[in-house]
Length: 338
Image (cartoon, rainbow, N blue to C red; front, side):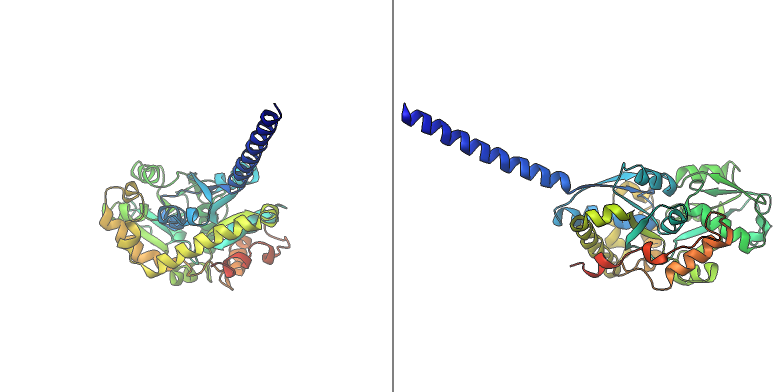
């Protein structure tokens, strides 16, 4: 009888130990589950998100990362502020804009140093030669309050147009953008690859302003313009530094992959439906535009000032506000990346 009692106790103790280990493992896994919303992960400007997943770099870091797709960056931003996701792959300019509204988010990995955006104009309007000729026209943007909207408003102001001279129309990207231009719902619009190449190939549109390269961005915006990034709420970053470091490790490895491989090699790691039936065009766009990505995830030194200057040119939200740019990004994690 004594043996039975001891045996039962031993088994019970072992069972509790196993259960405790399983619970601890489960908690560790839950802690490393991170949800990131991407402002259109088929866009080449946000390529590092899906590429990191495809290369297995998240798993290498012991992370369980779920990527959610959202057509407009402003909607992804709202999901972050609501606590529905832990991070956003979107434009850095949201970090500046949100600080003006009293909310603190920061870029923890800076993917690009140029917007990768182009203002396309419909070939139904051959008389439009510059941004100043867009007065009275409907201009496509991904969403109202999105980075494409910010850049459109800046370019309009720079060309001497007043608020109300143009109408921003939210049309997303890809097929919805193309349909809006074909149906004359927009006469021009700001978009990215592969949408750009698709409209150029069919000769339905032409380039009015090109910001796909660092040089093009400097000419259009007056300086280096850090754009695509992984940004997160500052409080979350401070409370989850180990997880953020793992994300930085994965993304810095991804950026190095982009900088050391051809467009064709990168394309092979991406979902095939991203080619939209034109792999050659997709690869050509990658080869032409991958220079916009940083090599190491570090914020370009002169970039934040350019973004603040651009937003201050048209945004009443930002004008007159004291913005602490040092709190809109951090290089702590990328500089410590493996």
